[in-house]
Image 1 (cartoon, rainbow, N blue to C red):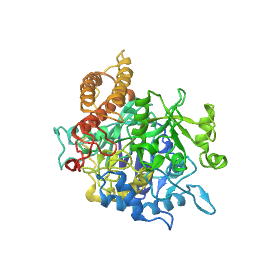
Image 2: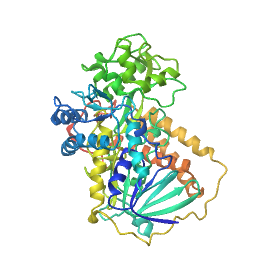
Image 3: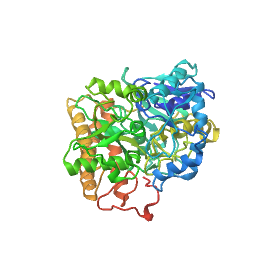
Image 4: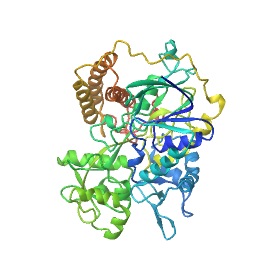
Length: 528
């Protein structure tokens, strides 16, 4: 089966929905999403959107905070462009129906770690859900946008599928669309498009502990890598310092904004330890806070630390963090009086498919925006709440670029259908679940918050075996989402391990015990 569209968007988070609304004014749009359209990393974003909305704030202050967090690897021109366009995106969301928290008639602006000013636009502590709901409602109502729920993108279509062997990144590769598995009908659809946009989100599921939903398996990054797009800075994985530590709490994070509001981190002996590591205390950037917690756990042998808001005004805590309060209450915790048990968890990929500020990848006709992309905004460490800002700004820019004829490809009717000849439904699906579990544990133990050359080599050897087993299984087995996700996760693991091995220093989110300092020789992107 074939589908012909002007624009094919893979993913339905803030970036995918935002660019869909822009492109629908220029042609027919298809959004392919592997779960329900509302299931995305955006939907779980609690903190907010960083934007200069106060006369006391300035673009320059936001730029400098971003550059400082990025530890020398941000592209300053990208940072300045995205920061400058932030306020317009807030107004765009408001015009589209998004309702942000207000106080005394003005937007209530929160403050998070690494920010010199209060500039976090938020909807209580469920900003992502508000943004997702407002965008999705408009998408569903648009007559030029078709949403394909429960459709899994398998591969990007390039010259490789036309019989030409493409073994490396080169300037003349083009993307003609994607092969997509319709899970309900158990068939592969060949989507042909003039421009294809990756908005598939992150890859937190490659780690054992993550704040990301089950869908965050790095599909877009893995597909782009296999298509020979340039991928950069995959060693920079941001671990959120404070995920709820409870056996029944599934990937629930305690927002950065809680520390921004004045919460204290205590070890199990009751000592407030963050001032021992950084003068900014709990307002230090996430990588510093995550490593401090990791150090406390390893030195003291504790399983978790505590986040306390007991010294803050009870009514304000409950007003500002209703979602967190309600969730903790399910586990017998009163956030305004009890200390909340927390641990770090994989949260955000600062690296990804390399693009410019307009979302253009190294492959003609292929764009990327949101967490799947690496624009140069985040550098070696993402400043809190800059992610939704980037997704919104770059999606609008990418829509303009993708609508220009010179950036598009002609619909290629020579593309063959998906070849599943010789595959069958095997009996040993336990191999998929086992290999996924093993991969997540390898990445958590050896390629986590603190790394070493020895650990990375162990991870490389073990993931190589998983790769060979899974590829052999993939060639023989009937397609399923779980098998394809595992294949993508192994590709992501390789990219992280290889990138981390090449960066023989410690910078931002990448900390090597045998290379503890930063070196000017590594003031460049890691490109694969």
